[in-house]
Picture 1 (tube, rainbow, N blue to C red):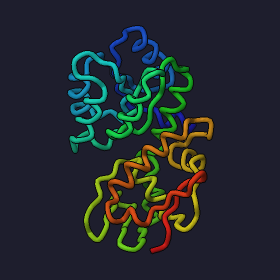
Picture 2: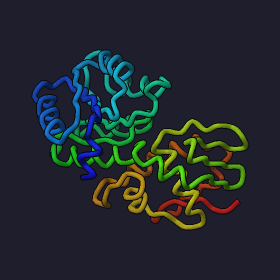
Picture 3: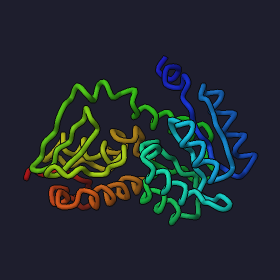
Length: 237
């Protein structure tokens, strides 16, 4: 029942210049109940994202002309598309592309070749974190930690009244760490509670997002501890 309600009228934009790969993803996402939009062009992907507002974008790094990393950066800069979840599709050997994609604001990456079944499952996991659950989050109210204020109903974070420009994933990370302040959260715990993944997924995703969050927190980053070999925590000020 949950999957059916999740996928109903949910639009996913798939961007890949390999026709066979594009068709394979299209077939499986359509079979899972999603409304699939597709293109092999980075420039066209930007146009479709702005005009059609998909609920998620699967974005290949290696695109002719405007590549996936540049597309990701432009999508994050545009207020109309900045909050759309982005999953980068990267070649297994190109670790630098995966890191750059996360640094530019992608929510996750999947390496090629990949299991299409895994791709569909991870798409569903990521979508489950989106507005369908906002009603529950709104009931949880405000979080204050020193000068850091997390306003969950409005999905805003600020430090001494200065609004922090956080992505959805960074906001979720900050919220969980602030709610559980004083308690160390392992990478595996964060993977499960933020991404909905099990610990078999590469934990570097967590580390990369934590670096980005720390940079965006500015002076509030002094509240964020890295516990070597364990994980992360917000400490009491």
